[in-house]
Length: 98
Image 1: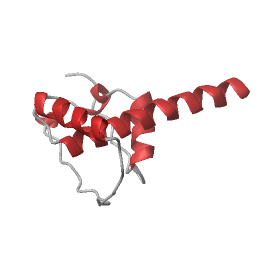
Image 2 (image 1 turned 180 degrees about the vertical axis):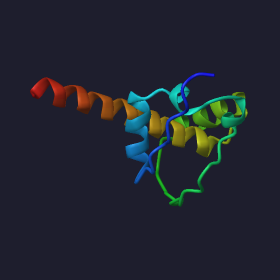
Image 3 (image 1 turned 180 degrees about the horizontal axis):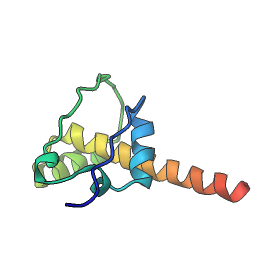
């Protein structure tokens, strides 16, 4: 058997967790198939009201339906991906400035 799995840190925020996974491999944190069962922490949710163009709303609903996911979850994933990209750019610029 290979080396033992590393212990995951206790993340203080979702942004901290996103940054962590941008630089670490999940393979380092599992030992075998039994470790693939992930216990998800319930995170507090915040209800957000936003306005968007009706055409964008309709397209998001169509894409969500085509992928069999709730449209709110799809919007949330789009926001997450956008934040990951922005954070990666900010880190790249910060490294270039040093």
